[in-house]
Amino acid sequence: MKDSFGREINYLRLSITDRCNLRCVYCMPMRGLSFVPGDELLSPLEIEAVVRAAAETGFRKIRLTGGEPTLRNDIVHIIERIKSVEGIKELTMTTNGYLLPKLAKPMADAGLDRVNIHIDAVNHDQLLKTMRLAEPSKAWAALAAAEEAGLTPIKLNAVVTRGYNEDDVHELARLTLDHPWHVRFIELMPLGAPAGIALDNLVSTAETIALIEAQLGPIFPLNGGALDGEARLYRLPGAEGTLGFISPVSAPYCDDCNRMRVTADGKIRLCLLSDQEIDFKNTLRSGASHKDLIALFQKAVTHKPWGHKLKEGVHPKLRTMSQIGG
Ligand code: SAM
Ligand code: SF4
Image 1 (cartoon, helix red, strand yellow):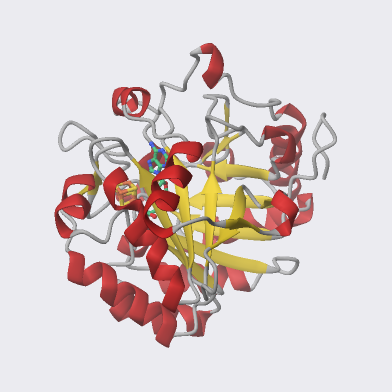
Image 2 (cartoon, protein in one colour; image 1 turned 60 degrees about the vertical axis):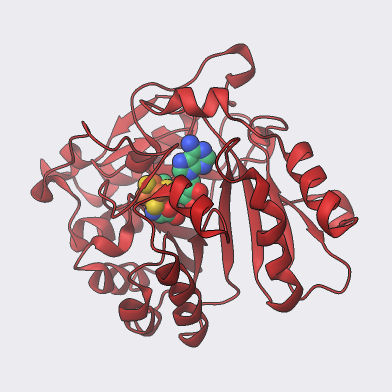
């Protein structure tokens, strides 16, 4: 289905919990957050109903996210329910990976296609500083488990934060020399309570590229510099993997946006960086029919705003990234 600006909207990101076992500096405050009570989170059957309505509206790709999606103890069942929906071509997950040694195989068997694993640094101190509560050995075990379960190609996500991990971006880039991984560097976005850190500590894509090139030499654009999803891809000479740069602040890609989100408390969020939302869960729980749910998605696609206004200093206040899922 096309939105009112002619963009094909076919990618839905589902935040299935707002809880997390880490507290990344730019995502979740250490204290003071309240979480959606367990019975307010969508159940596997409700998630299937969301996805069925979304599939009928034209959504073809689903990404599970959070908070940390693997903290749901019914995660394998959720994957099975989504895979039962006709029309869904790809099911992926964004995770910090800490539970992958236990879950990668059952999730892959249930139909998960691949994972993006979030790791902000190779250097231990910088990893701990950025992804508070992190355990470096768990991050590496996550990558090994995902590879062994065939959840490939693996993408690594790193959010670059001045004063925290920007000195280590070249070490993350270096990983692509010997691994077929896609390491993606994400510009900080200001959302909710931790917005201050994003506004003060942004490292632009141009600077991240300069930091990598200063240590490892020139990197080369792929695809003629065109966007691949939301990333522009590069490669180090002779590398097995690629480098991706996601630049929502310095080079917004709103004109290519194909996505929409469902928050952990069951609202359709029309744009990551705008607080416009449409309730889904209450409608679903008050006995709505499949047709009613499709109508909600159609309304959401029709009302999707053009893009964000970060450059004008407008940023969303309602939620943290952990409640939306990135
Ligand atoms: N816990 C999982 C993880 O960390 O991958 C999934 C949820 S997390 C909210 C999804 C993605 O959002 C992460 O990969 C992280 O890189 C990104 N993220 C979180 N806060 C961000 C911020 N303020 N700006 C940019 N990206 C952010
Ligand atoms: Fe947790 Fe992911 Fe947010 Fe980090 S980015 S605090 S791992 S939800």
